[in-house]
Structure formats: C-alpha cells, structure tokens
Image 1 (cartoon, rainbow over the protein chains, first blue to last red):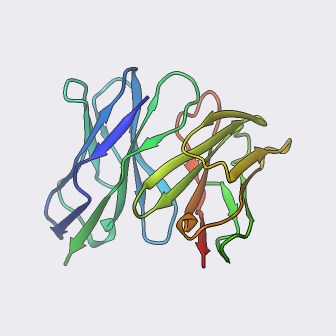
Image 2: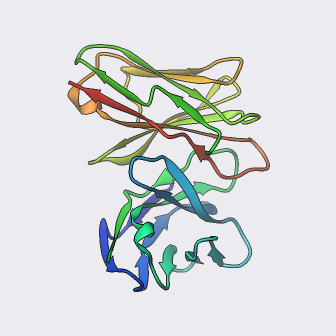
Length: 114
Length: 113
C-alpha cells in the first residue's frame, strides 16, 4: 500500500516570491508520482507527473517537481508565483504496475498575496 | 474540460435519504474511480471499476455502493445518508494501458441536511 504526506496544510506567499510545497510518500513498490491542482469550485487537474527517467519534471505554467528516491520525496516548486496560482495542490502516488487507484495527500492550500 | 462528466453538480437532501451520483468517463476509458473529498479526511478513494467489474475497494461504507454499466458510465449510490456524508464526490477515469494518469470530473457536491 502507498501513503502520501503533505507536510504543510497551508502556505501563504507573496506574489513573485518562490514557493516549495512538500510531499513525501511511502511505498513498498515502485510508483508513479503526480501533482494535481484544484482551483476554487473546480475539479482536479493534473499539473505534472513523474513516471521514469529524468527526476526533474516541469509543467507548462512554471511549476517543477523533483523526484528524490532516497528521501522518498516529490516536492513542488515555482521560482515566482502569481495571484492565479492560488489553489489547493495535491500530491498523489500510485503503483507502477496495473491500473491501480491514486492515493492522495491531504492537500496544501497555496495562497498568493498581492 | 477533462472529458469526464458528472451529474448532478449539486445535490441537497435530508438525512436518511438515498441518492445516486452519475459519472460518464472519457470516451474510450475503461476504468472509473470514485473519490470522496471532505474537509477533515481529504481525498479518499472509495471504489474502482474496470469494464464493468469491481477492481479495487477503498474506504467505502457499506451504505454506499457503485456499479459500472455496459456503456461504461458509472453510478455511485449513497443510502441512509448522514450529515457526515456531506462532501464533494469525484469521479475519475483512465485507460487500462497507455495513459497512466486519471482524469477527473468536476465533482458532485452533496449536502445532507
């Protein structure tokens, strides 16, 4: 079984400042890792994913995440945030064998302050 | 638009009642997942169906049940509703092979009064 811990439930940050949202996972098997974003009153959208290969993955809107196997982490970073990045961010993991369900962390609410 | 459709968007009902939530997966997706999102529990996996068969079960109460029909749409039935069942219920779909990610619908917000 897998589990995900998002260490911060809320992260306030000023506009144009950098941000890091932390995610640690636990699994006895190899996994795929994901970050989903949920804007207010909307569903979940995939932000980025790590499947294999390069440990640094990027999204189209400036976010990046780095897979660290030794630390079992998949932290999400952005060098300069915008007001529009205000949302809830969920880290998720699933086994890389079979069509298994995603296991989510409890989420981190990112609030960007003007 | 993820291609996953959930109806209704909002539902208000009384304790003790029964409701049905509906999900139409993306075209071609065989697997459907149901999740419950509440403030205290976060996103909890309830149940997964693949091509009409139950594939995996998570933290689903006995009062809840689901099924996937031959046209691949799925329904989540919630009965003997309690105040604590108030939550956002998400459906997601994925293909067995090829696409590894799951695509989520907009959710159904259930309020039990």
